[in-house]
Image (tube, rainbow, N blue to C red; front, side):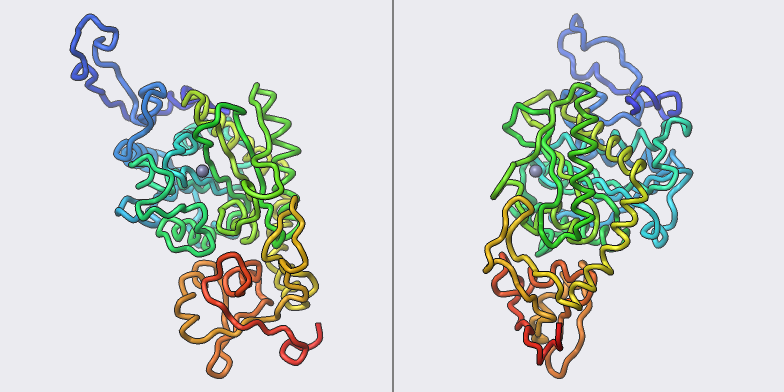
Length: 428
Ligand SMILES: [Zn+2]
């Protein structure tokens, strides 16, 4: 869509960059007189891709966009382990709705740089939100007439600062979207709970890869509501695999299975958003390509996702709206197995499925206390039952219940006692 130059006529602020200070030889090209640089360019753009946007530059950039575009509202939704802010940018035309109304409409959520040594998605996210903020209204994507765009440009600010994959506690945020022990993953979980996105883009890089331009993948977890997974897959196979090559990009599937990478792990955001009833897309650029190219392919992908959302918004909204009730009914009727393992390209063995699934798990009061952050952030309800607490399967977020509390799951937080018998559950 819009290159950085497309918005420049709309800019207000001009700042002078004292590049003379960096020069030792006045004969060098870099010692030309100070040039005018607008504050709505990222640090990365100002340096033509020679050096990623710094933390301080990001703060100034977001503040300028927030102050000067009616289409934008930015708040902190969390802080990192080392206390850096995690910002949520809301973009809509003519302006974002109040927060408590955004969830009721279509929402696209873009997450940049969960892995701090994968910076291109963050650069693309900053440019993407800026272009949506300032491009002429007539050039806005059609989808923005109804869709609210949410962006967390830097989900792992400590990791970006240190150029490390993990956060400052040495935890991989993109394996933490079920356990939710990191403040960074908790911030993302809270946004998903409060804004109920319909589609989530998670921008990554493969640091040692040279090709292709992009690898892409949808939520493979088998507990994702079928139409949500099908539409996520259609975004990759029917839209992005068709459109990105038109502009010369090479695209492939990420980690074709079976088995990791690209598996069903519920701690990965790509799968976690599917379990939370949103379409999901993993985007992986090749980290050994030029930085500007990597940022550009990420931004093109974000624009294409918005295009797909606009084209198929009826189907997407229908699937995402139906998913919670459909899953609640499946949990109540126990009409489908629950899959502790296995992916849509890797059939589970019989012992990896709960068939029939429990109707509920009994938890002790102490277990509920341990589990409280996950219950709260994932929107799960419990019921007091004598001295125990019941975590029922007939609720919209049953998609994560056994993963959290079944002793045979990959990484349960506590081991609850499943209720399976007809005596306990009634006839299925
Ligand atoms: Zn990554």
